[in-house]
Image 1 (cartoon, rainbow, N blue to C red):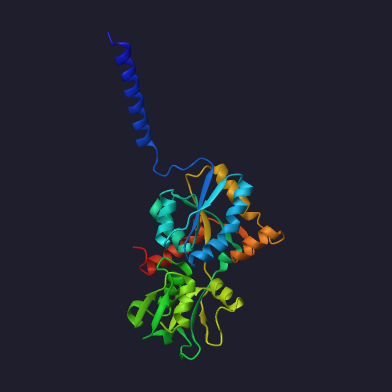
Image 2 (cartoon, one colour):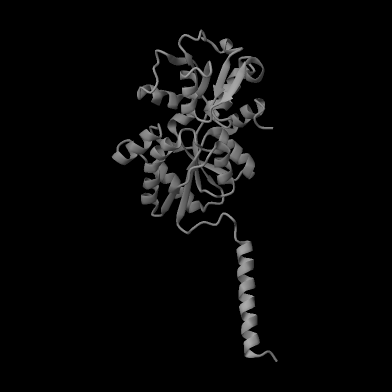
Length: 294
């Protein structure tokens, strides 16, 4: 016969064992209930990220009725891994990072909205006005900078269009540099560290509008054909109801309200529109052709 004391000890041990098994079974990406974690590819400086995404975080928190946390990451690959491993729930991806996340997750990343501008996006090549560079062919033998290696508009598509023009950056340029972010790309040309560079057209336009660059000294010499680019993506394991609410909240942002105008202007958008995975197949093809995806 088991004594009362022994029985109590066995029950306590069983409780501890059950708790241990439960903790092992729990996913490592468990989050606090009612918290939506948001991040973005770090295409610009951390201070600019906070300025751009603070208002949309507050908007989503109000509309969804749940806590929303913005969690910055250090580089583009970290944004991919964060969503693939469900360390975050909602990510502002470039087209290429979306493709990378799709591949890494086995097709479990869902694009839910893009800016209207992202259906016809472009990159620009810039140089100093007195550089003598007028065409892509003039880049041969020069020092050229891209942004992040995982950037769509700052690397993948500029590289793809160079290859289509018969120019191989790895063979034809004297040096290839990677600035890590679009604002740093502009700075590298302004300072003369490189002869030319490629970047996101909307970042360039913002710098021009805000008079952060003197177009008499540095300007665009080539604009690429259009391609699909940025989107908001979630993991396929997100509850469908929450995904639909987030999508609805993004699509309802309007320039006709002060809040909507602030958010859309900061994100260089006129409005958000629905998107789908098929829109980014061309980027995957371009990445494989350029050797950026094996």
